[in-house]
Image (cartoon, rainbow, N blue to C red; front, side, top):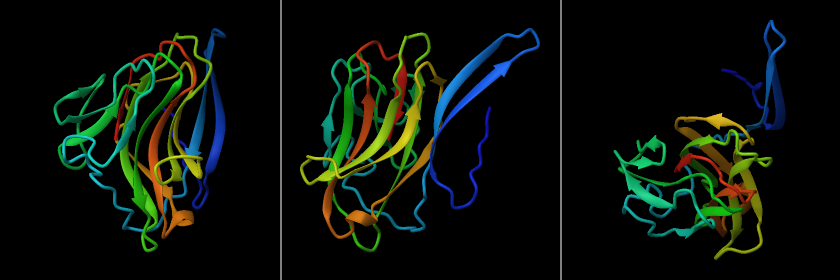
Length: 212
Protein backbone atom coordinates (compact mmCIF):
# COMPACT_ATOMS: atom_id res chain seq x y z
CA UNK A 1 0.00 0.00 0.00
CA UNK A 2 1.31 3.44 -0.97
CA UNK A 3 -0.08 6.49 0.77
CA UNK A 4 0.48 9.92 -0.79
CA UNK A 5 -0.54 13.03 1.14
CA UNK A 6 -0.42 16.28 -0.88
CA UNK A 7 0.47 19.51 0.85
CA UNK A 8 -2.40 21.79 1.79
CA UNK A 9 -3.73 23.75 -1.16
CA UNK A 10 -1.92 21.64 -3.76
CA UNK A 11 -3.76 20.09 -6.72
CA UNK A 12 -2.93 18.71 -10.16
CA UNK A 13 -2.00 15.53 -12.03
CA UNK A 14 1.26 13.58 -11.73
CA UNK A 15 2.54 10.44 -13.49
CA UNK A 16 4.26 8.12 -10.99
CA UNK A 17 6.32 4.98 -11.62
CA UNK A 18 7.20 2.64 -8.74
CA UNK A 19 9.89 -0.05 -9.06
CA UNK A 20 10.43 -2.72 -6.37
CA UNK A 21 13.50 -5.00 -6.35
CA UNK A 22 14.16 -7.88 -3.95
CA UNK A 23 17.46 -9.23 -2.66
CA UNK A 24 17.76 -11.66 -5.59
CA UNK A 25 17.57 -8.86 -8.09
CA UNK A 26 14.02 -9.66 -9.17
CA UNK A 27 11.71 -6.74 -9.52
CA UNK A 28 8.43 -5.34 -10.74
CA UNK A 29 7.35 -1.94 -12.01
CA UNK A 30 3.95 -0.28 -11.90
CA UNK A 31 2.92 3.10 -13.27
CA UNK A 32 -0.12 5.15 -12.35
CA UNK A 33 -1.50 8.66 -12.58
CA UNK A 34 -2.24 10.58 -9.38
CA UNK A 35 -4.95 13.23 -9.58
CA UNK A 36 -5.40 15.67 -6.69
CA UNK A 37 -8.56 17.76 -7.05
CA UNK A 38 -9.21 21.13 -5.53
CA UNK A 39 -12.18 20.32 -3.31
CA UNK A 40 -14.68 23.18 -3.28
CA UNK A 41 -15.33 24.72 0.13
CA UNK A 42 -19.10 24.93 -0.30
CA UNK A 43 -21.34 22.67 1.75
CA UNK A 44 -24.31 22.87 -0.61
CA UNK A 45 -24.02 21.56 -4.15
CA UNK A 46 -25.76 21.69 -7.51
CA UNK A 47 -28.91 19.50 -7.31
CA UNK A 48 -29.49 16.73 -9.86
CA UNK A 49 -32.83 15.34 -10.94
CA UNK A 50 -33.18 11.78 -9.60
CA UNK A 51 -29.61 12.17 -8.39
CA UNK A 52 -29.66 9.05 -6.21
CA UNK A 53 -31.62 7.07 -8.82
CA UNK A 54 -34.41 6.91 -6.25
CA UNK A 55 -36.96 6.10 -8.98
CA UNK A 56 -35.16 2.81 -9.60
CA UNK A 57 -34.43 3.79 -13.20
CA UNK A 58 -32.77 6.47 -15.33
CA UNK A 59 -35.65 8.98 -15.21
CA UNK A 60 -34.14 12.43 -15.79
CA UNK A 61 -30.91 11.00 -17.18
CA UNK A 62 -29.51 10.42 -20.68
CA UNK A 63 -27.52 7.20 -21.03
CA UNK A 64 -25.12 6.15 -23.78
CA UNK A 65 -23.74 2.62 -23.85
CA UNK A 66 -20.34 1.71 -25.27
CA UNK A 67 -20.19 -0.84 -28.10
CA UNK A 68 -19.96 -4.46 -26.87
CA UNK A 69 -20.14 -3.66 -23.14
CA UNK A 70 -18.76 -6.11 -20.59
CA UNK A 71 -21.75 -5.33 -18.34
CA UNK A 72 -24.38 -2.87 -19.55
CA UNK A 73 -25.42 0.35 -17.84
CA UNK A 74 -28.29 -0.20 -15.41
CA UNK A 75 -29.84 0.93 -12.14
CA UNK A 76 -29.65 -1.76 -9.47
CA UNK A 77 -30.64 -2.05 -5.84
CA UNK A 78 -28.90 -2.80 -2.58
CA UNK A 79 -27.98 -6.46 -2.20
CA UNK A 80 -27.40 -6.98 -5.93
CA UNK A 81 -24.03 -6.92 -7.70
CA UNK A 82 -22.45 -4.84 -10.45
CA UNK A 83 -20.19 -7.57 -11.84
CA UNK A 84 -17.65 -8.12 -9.03
CA UNK A 85 -18.81 -5.59 -6.42
CA UNK A 86 -21.86 -5.79 -4.16
CA UNK A 87 -24.16 -2.79 -4.22
CA UNK A 88 -24.05 -0.72 -1.04
CA UNK A 89 -25.63 2.69 -1.82
CA UNK A 90 -24.40 5.66 0.19
CA UNK A 91 -27.86 7.25 -0.13
CA UNK A 92 -31.21 5.61 -0.76
CA UNK A 93 -31.56 2.08 -2.19
CA UNK A 94 -30.14 2.30 -5.72
CA UNK A 95 -26.99 2.99 -7.74
CA UNK A 96 -26.24 3.39 -11.42
CA UNK A 97 -23.59 0.94 -12.50
CA UNK A 98 -21.76 -0.74 -15.35
CA UNK A 99 -18.77 -2.98 -15.99
CA UNK A 100 -16.23 -0.13 -16.34
CA UNK A 101 -15.20 -1.50 -19.74
CA UNK A 102 -16.12 -2.68 -23.19
CA UNK A 103 -14.82 -5.06 -25.84
CA UNK A 104 -14.67 -2.06 -28.21
CA UNK A 105 -13.33 1.47 -27.87
CA UNK A 106 -15.97 3.96 -26.83
CA UNK A 107 -17.46 6.05 -24.04
CA UNK A 108 -20.06 5.01 -21.47
CA UNK A 109 -22.07 8.10 -20.51
CA UNK A 110 -24.57 8.88 -17.75
CA UNK A 111 -25.63 12.52 -17.95
CA UNK A 112 -28.35 15.12 -17.66
CA UNK A 113 -29.00 18.81 -18.29
CA UNK A 114 -28.52 20.80 -15.11
CA UNK A 115 -29.12 24.44 -14.18
CA UNK A 116 -26.05 25.53 -12.24
CA UNK A 117 -27.10 27.90 -9.44
CA UNK A 118 -24.91 30.92 -8.80
CA UNK A 119 -25.02 30.26 -5.06
CA UNK A 120 -23.85 26.61 -5.17
CA UNK A 121 -21.90 25.96 -8.40
CA UNK A 122 -20.29 22.72 -7.28
CA UNK A 123 -20.87 19.07 -8.06
CA UNK A 124 -20.19 16.38 -5.49
CA UNK A 125 -20.91 12.69 -5.90
CA UNK A 126 -20.02 9.28 -4.49
CA UNK A 127 -18.45 6.68 -6.74
CA UNK A 128 -16.87 3.26 -6.41
CA UNK A 129 -14.73 1.41 -8.97
CA UNK A 130 -12.94 -1.91 -9.43
CA UNK A 131 -10.94 -3.22 -12.37
CA UNK A 132 -8.57 -5.97 -13.45
CA UNK A 133 -6.61 -5.07 -16.60
CA UNK A 134 -3.72 -7.48 -16.03
CA UNK A 135 -2.36 -9.69 -18.80
CA UNK A 136 -4.59 -8.26 -21.53
CA UNK A 137 -1.96 -6.47 -23.59
CA UNK A 138 -3.61 -3.10 -23.00
CA UNK A 139 -1.48 0.00 -23.55
CA UNK A 140 -3.98 2.79 -22.84
CA UNK A 141 -5.51 3.82 -19.50
CA UNK A 142 -9.21 3.78 -18.74
CA UNK A 143 -10.60 7.06 -17.42
CA UNK A 144 -13.57 8.25 -15.40
CA UNK A 145 -14.34 11.94 -15.95
CA UNK A 146 -17.11 14.52 -15.77
CA UNK A 147 -17.75 16.35 -19.04
CA UNK A 148 -19.50 19.70 -19.35
CA UNK A 149 -21.39 20.32 -22.61
CA UNK A 150 -24.12 22.66 -23.90
CA UNK A 151 -27.72 21.74 -23.14
CA UNK A 152 -28.65 18.62 -25.10
CA UNK A 153 -24.99 17.70 -25.65
CA UNK A 154 -22.48 18.98 -28.17
CA UNK A 155 -19.01 20.45 -28.28
CA UNK A 156 -17.24 19.93 -24.97
CA UNK A 157 -16.98 23.00 -22.74
CA UNK A 158 -14.81 21.41 -20.09
CA UNK A 159 -13.81 18.11 -18.50
CA UNK A 160 -12.57 17.04 -15.07
CA UNK A 161 -10.69 13.74 -14.86
CA UNK A 162 -11.80 11.96 -11.70
CA UNK A 163 -9.93 8.63 -11.88
CA UNK A 164 -7.36 6.98 -14.18
CA UNK A 165 -6.84 3.21 -14.27
CA UNK A 166 -3.43 2.52 -15.87
CA UNK A 167 -3.03 -0.39 -18.33
CA UNK A 168 -2.04 -3.72 -16.75
CA UNK A 169 -3.21 -2.49 -13.34
CA UNK A 170 -5.52 -4.09 -10.77
CA UNK A 171 -7.73 -2.62 -8.07
CA UNK A 172 -10.30 -4.97 -6.50
CA UNK A 173 -12.26 -2.12 -4.90
CA UNK A 174 -11.54 1.58 -4.42
CA UNK A 175 -14.26 1.74 -1.80
CA UNK A 176 -16.67 4.65 -1.91
CA UNK A 177 -14.88 7.86 -2.88
CA UNK A 178 -16.08 11.47 -2.98
CA UNK A 179 -15.79 13.22 -6.33
CA UNK A 180 -15.88 17.01 -6.59
CA UNK A 181 -16.06 19.31 -9.61
CA UNK A 182 -15.88 23.10 -9.50
CA UNK A 183 -18.60 24.52 -11.78
CA UNK A 184 -18.14 28.22 -11.01
CA UNK A 185 -17.29 28.88 -14.67
CA UNK A 186 -20.87 27.83 -15.55
CA UNK A 187 -22.73 29.44 -12.64
CA UNK A 188 -26.11 30.82 -13.62
CA UNK A 189 -26.31 28.76 -16.85
CA UNK A 190 -27.75 25.41 -17.88
CA UNK A 191 -25.34 22.78 -19.17
CA UNK A 192 -25.15 19.04 -19.62
CA UNK A 193 -23.07 17.16 -17.04
CA UNK A 194 -21.99 13.67 -18.06
CA UNK A 195 -20.22 10.99 -16.03
CA UNK A 196 -18.01 9.40 -18.71
CA UNK A 197 -15.98 6.21 -18.72
CA UNK A 198 -13.58 6.25 -21.68
CA UNK A 199 -12.30 2.98 -23.15
CA UNK A 200 -9.47 3.66 -25.59
CA UNK A 201 -8.82 0.20 -27.06
CA UNK A 202 -10.89 -2.38 -28.94
CA UNK A 203 -10.09 -5.60 -27.12
CA UNK A 204 -11.31 -7.51 -24.09
CA UNK A 205 -11.33 -5.04 -21.23
CA UNK A 206 -11.22 -7.43 -18.28
CA UNK A 207 -13.58 -7.57 -15.33
CA UNK A 208 -14.55 -4.31 -13.69
CA UNK A 209 -17.29 -2.48 -11.85
CA UNK A 210 -18.46 1.12 -11.57
CA UNK A 211 -21.10 2.45 -9.19
CA UNK A 212 -22.43 6.01 -8.98
